[in-house]
Image 1 (cartoon, rainbow, N blue to C red):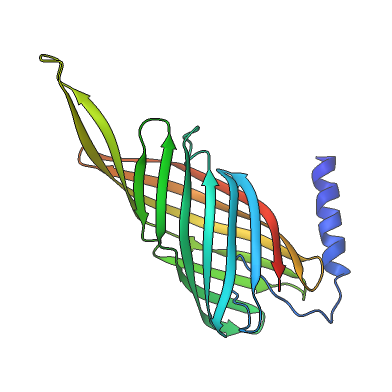
Image 2: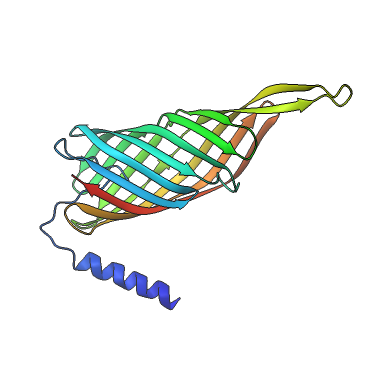
Amino acid sequence: MKTLRFVLLVLAATVVAAPKTARAWSTQGGETLSPSENALHVGTGFPWALQTGYHIPLMESFELVPNFGFYYGQATTVPLVGNFLGVQLKFRALKSGNFHLALAGEPGFLMNYYPGKFAFGIQFGLPQVLATYNVTNVFALHFGLRMPIGILFNRYTEVDPWSGTQESKTQVIGLIPVVAHFGMEYSVSSTVNIFATMNMGVLVGVTSDGSEAEFYPAFIIGGAFRF
């Protein structure tokens, strides 16, 4: 409890003491960068051993974020080793004072390596609604709702109990995460941010045999570097 109080006091002090002249910028919510800037973010946490993305603003309210991740779990399943390669498309639909609201999609490819055989998946990454509120010029709060729907093609071998023959089959699994997105981001300097994000909700898996829901926790801590 004393440690938590200390962390909260330090955080409050940094927010109060934040320089007023710095221009707010952030990468993990509904805000987009200006077209003259790029940024790289790198993070780690659960289930991500590594998650990184490069922010490329194409216009004032629209940016592409090619991203790559290496994960060691999914929802409450550990170990489940694989990686994700995709691109986030983020359109800032509203900016009102310190508040930013964006619509986003994150299409990409999933590749599971362990356990079992190699499994390949497609993530459609829709829908996502992301918001940011800049509390000060250097401290932002993020929140939103994410449903990055996808499909996984899982190869497995079925053995006939009578003949002993083996047959290779493919199981199609629909992945429907429904998660709330929370986070905070703090500008250490005009070009460096630190952030922490959390996604909490459920993951619904759908197969020909029915559906099953499980708790979906995820968090990432990391840094963003603006160029």
